Length: 366
Image 1 (cartoon, helix red, strand yellow):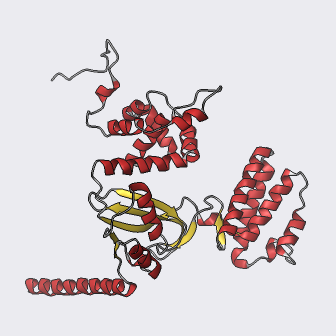
Image 2 (spheres, one colour; image 1 turned 90 degrees about the vertical axis):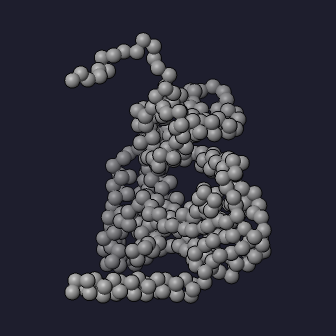
């Protein structure tokens, strides 16, 4: 049998890259969608001398495509730009590295938000959003942070003072300890349940400062500690994560506590398109419904009277009902007792069906 040989065949002329991509691929929609956006603000910002920058239009295209492909890692996106023909086409051949992609995403959060709003606007213009019935719900998303990297405020301030003194080249750690721990000689007299964690964290950061003589690195550590201290001042929390300051301890479905974020999403019932989204630090959904409705109206315009608003009992509160009634929206939110009753009835129904199935099964065997 003869096989098709292609390894040693050469093109007389290079092919058009679009010939390698299916004509109905979603990347063409991504391309036309981003091409219609206004990037004049960026063109003014990058006007003048200096090394040429990647056009924000290209960066937005590859970031939007990566969202559709559920690829979040900047390194994975950079690899796709080098190896995946779709990303090569959208990037128009340049290959930004992972750091460029990561920095662009961090430094242009407002642009990413506008990208989402334009997506919702396009869906509305196409008539695929009805805005007759909306559903809002929250979900706990685990932060990329370990429980072992959380510290008490007092410990954090000790580390901060140590780094601050190191930057001034005049460290006096004993005075810092006396200031924050009072009569305690040091770590050996701290609470037993926290002592080993405190020692490990303090030792880790002090070791980093002493090992690296670079003032830049010490400044980075000082900034990390300052951001973490700001979280203590912003919210009444006992501990903060050094790797993900804004995350909070929240109870998950398993009943355990993890460093987490509370994500809120509102979808339109016509095709299930997301019309609003937000991430918050609140441990409950009670205060998020109003914010979600305001975001929907910011993205889609004012909601018409009688629009159905669906949410679970986590959003049931007098303030939320009053807010929806003021806007003449139609709320569908169960009371806490009703939700508990429904849940109990569901369990009883399952037990009844299981019992009947067991009886029938035993009769069949006999």
